Amino acid sequence: GVAAGFFLPLLEELEGVRPVAPDRPGSGLSDAIDLPRRRYHETAVAWLDRLLDALELDTTTLLGHSAGGTLALRYALAHPDRVARLVLIGPPALPGTRCPLPYRLLATPGVGDLLARVPPSRKSVLQFARFMGERETLSAHPDLIDLFLVAQRDPLAVAATSAEVRVLVSPLALLSRSGWRRRSRVRPDEVGKLAVPTLLIWGEREPL
Image (cartoon, rainbow, N blue to C red; front, side, top):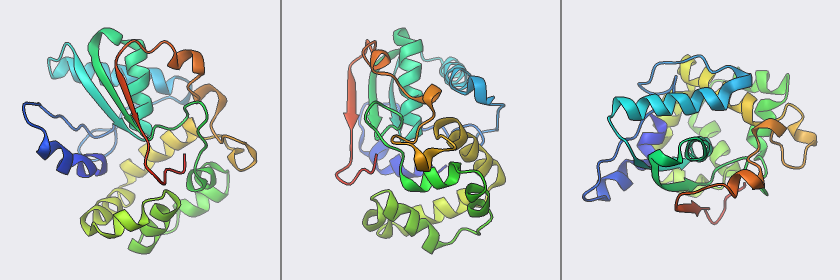
């Protein structure tokens, strides 16, 4: 999947570590699962719990990027006994973060539907990367652009991403300061309950 493709160079550098890079449900090689909007976070946490059971991992270090970071954080809050360390790279919906413009547009009724009908291209992938502060980086990795194109042409992956956007981003995001749905925001008191060593990483041009 796309996420695994981003981290393969990193995983190859780790010694003495058993790395596992799962695809999100409905993405890459993972089957889709029912992620009801009202219980999206709880269902996603339960999916990750079952994954660790299947891998026979009592405890693990979780690394989550973007929305995967929010999932990793929520899992650590729900099951602190199973998380030894937590690494979050640019997670959305944390206190003080703001939703980037592309996702605000995707979540806006009507506008998002129109954008979803535009066939993906290398140009559109690079335009998206520019808004996310990653155009120069992504331009140097044509294989990752190809991964994005494959994902954007996969109906299951598109549906999984759309469901995630609808859960995290407010339909009135263009008029909202943060852009996040109220019930999907990670509250300061929740962050304060983290009981595992946590590393939070932001890029130099991180639009969040």
